[in-house]
Length: 479
Image 1 (cartoon, rainbow, N blue to C red):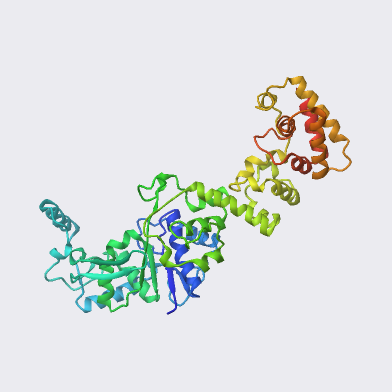
Image 2: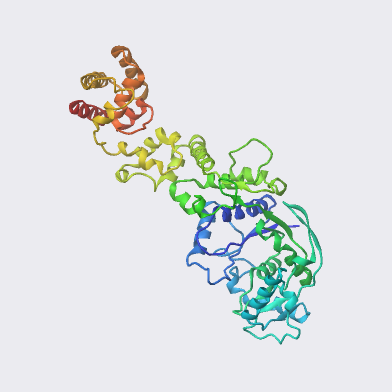
């Protein structure tokens, strides 16, 4: 059997963390089995359709390097890949059910259906439309809904994540197949599309599990073989008590990208959110995920969303790219994250800055707040010196004297490299009798006036002799 999976999002807005995980698992399964991934846009809910949402979906998948084999942009033999363009196909399949007596045109007005619903609520019994289906439905005409004529029975099936499942006849109902506007419902359209596209594994959220008996009834009525059904548990809010939503602090995938989360880290995190291969490994490349992925290792309970873990993984990937591929490879990802003051700096200089700052980055947007002093002189803030926990015991005259001693030492350096600078700094400690926390904090702050900077010798080397000495002198004169 050739494995064919699909990702079938609705273009109703921003692409959520959970949406993306629903793309990752079918992608991994298809690639692992040399199969195909089909991208299908389920856009039949025209009221909720958001302009530009499809392009956002495509852009996000491309960013994550989740390439699809059939679908929008790339085409394929099973198009169209927008459900809104497949109305004739759905009607053809619905007519099969009409002709076989397993569907009927339903002229019942919505007000009457609400009366039936209220009647059941008053009697405190479940509302099942099959108990009110019209006895002599008319011949179908455009503008009439088409309903499935269910035959209540029990079903048993295997879910690849949830295991052996069964249901009774009480859950089956006459669901709508084609709405009065001519568009299919999700319940019908995905059955038809999966059959036409030869989908072997249907992966979707666990919220559809309760509807599965109705889907099984449709497979049966249409004479279709059941695909493998894979229910993906919810991604939960950080407190674990509900499904993750916008109000729980989770941003869209696009927002994370704009904040400087790497695609490799996002893919790594979401793939492991509810799945593991039974090892202690935490950092996975896409190739390692493809090799290790298996359906039987997807957990059958919800997984808590943890942004702290995502950011930790992102820091690990920043270091991994730098260590394994070099500074230039990491620099490619940083284009939009430098401070405004860096706009005229050369690529070579920014790569030097990145090389000494990268291991402190959680997200690439940290570059904006952590590197500004490399590109313009910082504002001198004497209070930052005198209030520093290591320097507040020293008088302003002592601070001035220490700076002047440091300047003299650095002026005499013949070679301005990291080893020579470190040697000079160590000699300064001996000559002044100060602790590293005192002397080095003073020089570091005088150079950057920032809460953080890299190793002092690396900062001096990157800034260069002229700028470093100019800044130290300016601060010494200001005290």
